[in-house]
Length: 268
Image (cartoon, rainbow, N blue to C red; front, side, top):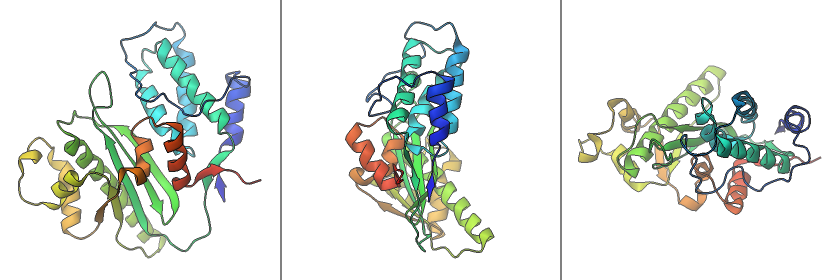
């Protein structure tokens, strides 16, 4: 089974924004982009930009691969500039080249909860805040995802990864509760991260110098780990599919992570 918004994306390109003749791009956002709220020429019609971003937010319901890009661009809704408009049109060009892609669900009896968690330290140029992201799977099937800027500036990469793991833990506990409501049996949720230091921080119940700048509610993960309600494991960065939820990647990496997440062309 496929989940796709092909018709919706086609209507955006052809009818709403008249971009059916544009050349497709291989990625939705330039690598190492430095979009800023202060740089670039102001655009006169901010409603066009807001309409573009709003339409793309709806497209993220089946296209996790554009979640990071749309999240970044939605931060400039109040005062968009020319570089922001160019970037949002790039996302549409990317969707044009991948219009036949969707989430593919194979038949499987495996419903174990697995969540891949990642964070990008100081990803935002203006406020220096990090971005957390996760991809949640029921067995091999992608069921939920998130890409969100953290509310507080992290003082180290360990802190931002730790906060990201906590957000993933909350999703894992919610999914487990949903399984219970549906009468499904589930094993202990498993969370995968690529930061050894943040995992050590989560597993250590003793006060540590690195924790004094971390808000108390983020230690929720430590409570669940000690209660053996979740498991956390290290995964190499090259296998961390949640990487595409926290930063702009090159075409090769993006395609590899999309395939690992079940986002693939529709088989007619």
